[in-house]
Image (tube, rainbow, N blue to C red; front, side):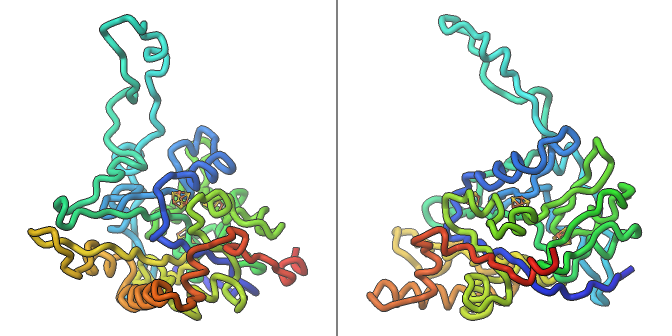
Amino acid sequence: MRYEVTTPKRQVAMVLDLNKCLGCHTCSVACKKLWNTDSGTDYTYWNNVETHPGRGFPADWQQTGGRTATGDVKQGKVPNLDTEYGRAWQFNHKNVIATDASSKKKDWLRPKGDPSWGPNWDEDEGTGTYPQDNHYFYLPRLCNHCAEPACLDACPRKAIYKRDEDGIVLVNQDRCHGYRFCVEACPYKKVYFDHERQVAAKCIFCMPRIEEEVAPACARQCPGRLRFVGYRDDEDGPIHKLVEKYKVAIPLHPEYGLKPNVFYVPPMSPPKLDDKGRPTGESRIPMSYLEGLFGKEVHRSLEILHAERAKKKQGQSSELMDLLIAYDWNDNFKLDNPKAREVI
Ligand code: SF4
Ligand code: SF4
Ligand code: SF4
């Protein structure tokens, strides 16, 4: 089933520069503390940060869901709570605190039970051979507030909708009957199920903050200053410059066909080394891997980034590099929206 999604008056969007992510998880914690600490959502992370190459969160999320060639929502699956999401772990804090400092037998902090997966299970593992081509990078992920959301199409209750004033995709939990078709359908696995309240729950793009023209918590708290937030149609704003003007910010898995409104500046990796330790000029992160995540546009994006960086190194000016450096974090966000104020 495919429902009509009307084009919103404006579309709010986010760009994340993967060259600057520290993997600190401040974004995930900021989101979680603000929006979902209830027991039914303890396993969920509306924002998560995963290491690539890696299986991600939930494990192997890239292998299910999306659309068919004719545009219909593919039948995905609900990830398993133990083996693909990983339950919120309980720890042996009491035993550790009770350990006598003089005792030879120490009890180390460890999770109770025998967990087999979790949000950061394969963090920093990466791949390759040191020192020739070992590599990894961080990929922070949140709902893409897609222009053509599969979650919305999949809901027979029409409980999911896209706001007219800013294009944020929301769940009306009063209408939701907990069928989880949206969880199955979202190929990014960014709708979760609240096991306590038996309803779907997802990133709300910090909608109450957006209404006050304040950046989302995950973006505002990011110490790497790598997140940019604004409206797609604001030609003076960072989103328009990075996506439309310089074309360096590109969506994750464009081939899913959902037209995401979260974009990424892909990672520029150092070169591989030969067996004598000399740089070969070949990208340490294989281009085939980046193409698998971001599609063919990643080649053009990286070419532009390398060219602009070279200009900056030679002392020439580069609006793009200045924007990405983010000298003043206030410049990362431009959220004035008189049109939204008319609607609210
Ligand atoms: Fe829906 Fe998933 Fe797109 Fe978010 S990323 S709007 S949950 S289809
Ligand atoms: Fe969480 Fe807000 Fe970021 Fe969405 S935009 S992931 S709700 S902090
Ligand atoms: Fe990366 Fe910023 Fe999140 Fe830290 S807060 S993990 S730097 S996106």
